[in-house]
Image 1 (cartoon, protein in one colour):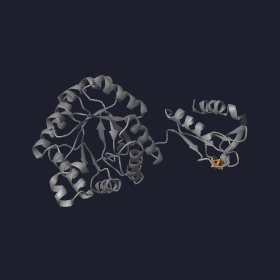
Image 2: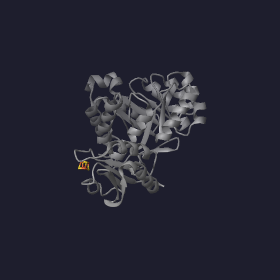
Image 3: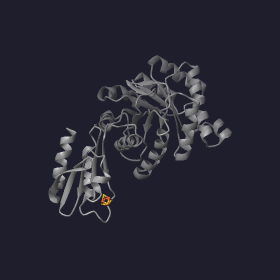
Image 4: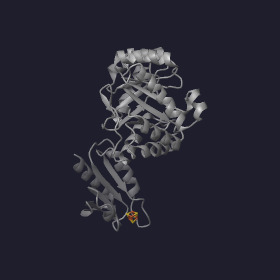
Length: 349
Ligand code: SF4
């Protein structure tokens, strides 16, 4: 059961309120370089990203949003630090949502200035608190803890509400996974605004992937979270594929082709690992619920993978193609790959 949250609309994409968990990512290009940024957003969208965030570091970035919007189909979130003026300029130039960091956007006066513009343009706001920039008064009171993160975020949410803004998403990210999980869990008990999940500064590909999967995944399986962003020091397209894998592992995305493969052992008499990798790569773009199996041996393979719609298991000199655990035909080992791909295409057409 997912936590019930309010629903917000980010440029036509809904977050919260029983809608699917949305995948977000962030561009790494200079936003004012419209051509490069648009190309990256298109690649992110093709990989499955549903909402994209861009850095608004200066006026040129904010002004570029207008032209960028013409070139891409994903809603664009303006990521603003320190400058309420840039937040306003980004909204005036078509941002579908604005992300502010409560630790550096300023006080009540600045929030009111942003809130007035938010109301004029009818866009939602994310209050994105990070451990690295918690406001002093909360740090002094609670130290670097989940309480400081949550109180800081909710204080700023309260200010937005005071000025009439109610379309809000909240995040409370840390690079420490247990702290992130504690913070979101606490936050989910105190608010019904939709939550944007992420582990910040998670690291390079492998470490970042594991930290994000553990942090985001443990929240999602407990029903917490409405939109996710995997942070990797790598190509953001990989963030999107990683986000998709996390949603699938949590049972929140069923329209995909799952490839199961055994780890192999001394009974394996063919190159099943290589084929498993090729098949996994091949099925990535398909949006269809199906299960394929690539198994190391005919002794245990078909039986172990009997819930697969289609599978292959290797023997000495030949392989067996099976469906739901039942052998359908035997193929020569050298033709196994080609024959298996023929069957996969038929299944997925
Ligand atoms: S399917 Fe066969 S090769 Fe793969 S792990 Fe099981 S026994 Fe070993």
